[in-house]
Image (cartoon, rainbow, N blue to C red; front, side, top):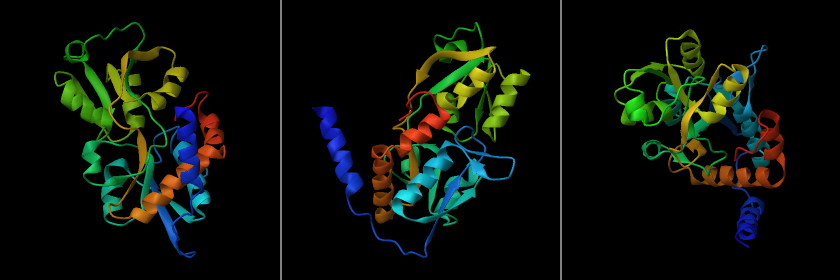
Length: 248
């Protein structure tokens, strides 16, 4: 009965009229472009990935013309606040710290943090077992903040991109890497000498779309569009293109 009520509520939200927007107004959406399989740049220079496909599907659901903007992670919230674009669809975790700066939609997927290391290594108490070990993470991410606040005795190796964090692990500069488990799922699959180590850590309320505070019509439109693509099967089609399991 509870499941039916949740779906009924989602259906009502999805079918409600969307807030009006000018037909000529282009919605600019930032994504990182260096966070596969969620965002990457293909051989033609085009942005691809789960986040990119979700952003396009949401724009179609809202009947909005959209432009995707590749933006470095370190600049992505400042760029939003400075009105360089209107929204961020970039696998951004909904955290209390970020909610002080931006508004978030409902989540469009969820993923825990996880350590990755060479096979055979055991981590029980991370605060103790990682002491003196080099752990790589992308700077200014949820993984970075978790390591900073909870594993102070580790040697935290911060790098600008996830690709550089992966490279640090592969080269031996880092003993472990911490990142979203969904991002590292394909890495572990492609590099069988590595595995997830220890237990997954849930640190946030899920992954949401970031907007400037006070733009309530746009927030409502995105939330309705998320509900619509969930109900009409578009979300599942995108999900299944990248993952053999439901990441919502």
